[in-house]
Length: 227
Image (cartoon, rainbow, N blue to C red; front, side, top):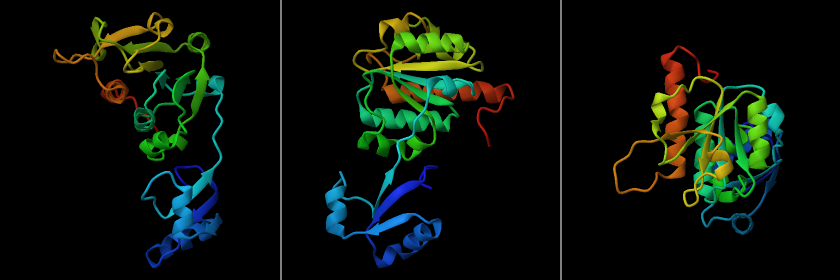
């Protein structure tokens, strides 16, 4: 499998250096279609692609089921940079998050740049897209999941709150920030930083918050993710 997701078809450019890879794919029973380098280049969206292009089914996740299990979720609101989004998805998987929840207007997580930045993590975690903030808030409340967001206007440092309980960490776009409806319904924390910088990169902020949750759980003897 590729990142836990079985491919439907793999377009592959054979070469002496990749004979082992071809044998592996055939052993897995994948449908492999040999193509020339010219054809592979025409299919790829990068100038120097690797030797294969896989076609995968897009995973489908429902919000209600995603919120049933776990203790950490990442909410991404209105983010437009696909590289940042892919990095945040990869971070969420590394921190043992149970799902990534994207509001309407957030860049497509299956954008090629987002997929590459996720390094395969895109297919390792449930992702729900197109959520209306009001609907998301109602679902989180019903599942007894607290919402925490980071903002320069926060008065409490992020490490001063309990992040071992069920909570969703919300990150907005770097230009606009979190939408008012989510900001007003969340516990707003601050990431202390030196003066002169308006805000951190969104992916960096997400990593700081996610791994603070991991740190607190480990400190209390709670396993933050399956081993």
